[in-house]
Length: 275
Ligand code: ZN
Image (tube, rainbow, N blue to C red; front, side, top):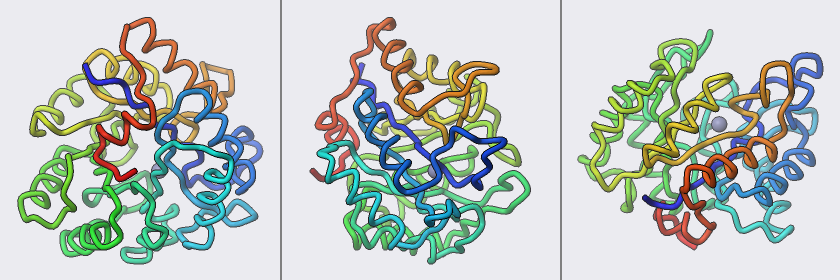
């Protein structure tokens, strides 16, 4: 089996809420600190959303830049995977692509439309093609986020059309999003990964209490994993997590299950991202 790539989704785009989410890093300084702690704990990919100084999620390039600079200045060699999402509905379509101008090694590429909680997350096909072209122009490897089976179909269609940048298909199965996402079950993981070509690499991200069992399953089944506070604020019921503690648990699980953990260099090779 391939070495396990551990990705940490450090902050996400939930509004700051000291009552409900006291452990979520929402200032640029805290996001950098938690990113470095997650990397030291064994994360080889850091998935980052940007926030203004007051914690408001944003897709502004100028808000991503200090995160990238701060993490790199500390000597961190993890792959940085910047969000091309909507900053919780604040950015629409092409506005979402602003962080690509920083030429990160990787960025998230949401493969379609979905009812995401109370909102509609838009990803019509003309936009997906423009997004694919922008990734290619900036030399950014897309992490194809698939929230539903049809999103896998769209990813394969874009590949077939030749609009995605060259390189291996890298798919993040994001399961269990309230709305129209598929539930976080083993049956769904197997159903969706069976649609992928054998050389594709896949990972599972699942929110809340589903994170731990889906992580364990993915380690056993040959997938990669995404952990972190974006998806799950708790270490266990009633106990708050930190990003680093969630990563440490994945490292221990992998050791018990005899799956080696990828180094940043191995992760770059497996994901086809430039050095
Ligand atoms: Zn995200």
